[in-house]
Image 1 (cartoon, helix red, strand yellow):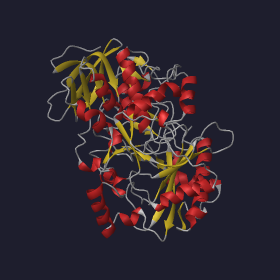
Image 2: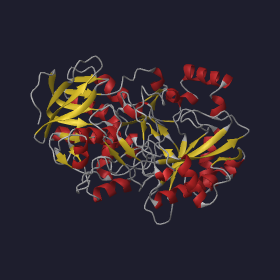
Image 3: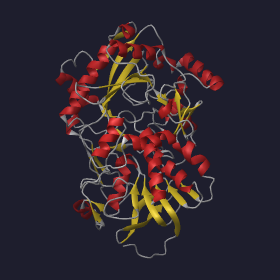
Image 4: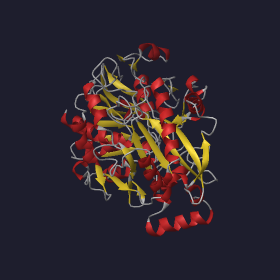
Length: 541
């Protein structure tokens, strides 16, 4: 129960916690008609750093704790006891401000499965209008124009620089039996294709710019950065506001919401905030001294992610991104970007990819390959000195599930994160198939002329068991985390299909944490779609 205090307070219609991609979309849409007052609270700082907006420059801030939460997982016995550093954006725009900019929609089969499993209203035909509403496709491919969007906020562009190795990858994938897909965001993901990116001209296109920048000028929208929310305030079982602090505040402040509190803090912070506020497993809440408002043991469970591994080949006879990022070649790239807005500085993490079925009988692809005409060293985002090219990959629909559990009522303390990667046999089998498919593409006629030989996993990883052993030692998070506030209609759900938190009122969660499982490809496009749909739900309620 919220007690009256002398703390500084304010009252608005909607209070949104977290300015990641979902929070930015919601802040725009809920304040758009001018009738509702909205406050958006973001724990990170503004997105003013220029390296956020130059696409390839994200590697210079990617590992910077000022813009990245850098969560650390618990030692995972499935990964030989390794703990992983997991990226989540700590800045306006959230992870969309520091990600690889790949724009990949989910598949029809995935959303239809959501609807069949209790997420009514989330079938493919019901979410497609929101993919289209969000999107401003600026590329040249028109084979799927009927299902693309051209007037939305979220810019989507074809690659401004296509490396010869990238073209060779797409040809090599066709040689090993994958069809060519002219539009990766068309009717199907299946096949080999050139990636599309969230880029407008020479700059990154992320919701903090495309949705929030102009909306911040509205008198009914207040955006507060470096605002850390410590708990959701309840009167009985109704959420009525939040308590937060900022640098320079001598005591916490409160914002009350006449209509709703909306949590969009991400796959780790959203369940953590619910648990700190009394929504979760009663035994866990008791252990940190929090009264249970709504008992729900599913809060923080069902953590899913794309488990990332890479096959790396040394290259010859061509300058890869590794060489183009150094010396006189880098000077040439900088000049090309400054004068023409082109070149490698416009690239995200991947330039082409392929989706395929890891075994016969599947209704849709369940594995993704991502080609890079370069290769990274042990530090994520840092290119190697030697010429290299790589294929990253992951199981698209992981069955391994982890969890997130609060440690204390201190919002600055990271929650306990159990990844449980590769705990499911299915995931291990898909990893093996991805390695074999990647090797087949590198051995194709189109790519063999450029290849010196495999560096990773290398000759010591030939059998299935050896490949899995390598994955346990070197695989990591693909940073497409979902599921910890799972949507559904059953008792294992945290939110209902309207994204309302079960057991309480006045409270929703809108971010990747509500997704029941990963979709194929990178998750950002789907988060933006979900937020567009959620905004309509909220305004209609």
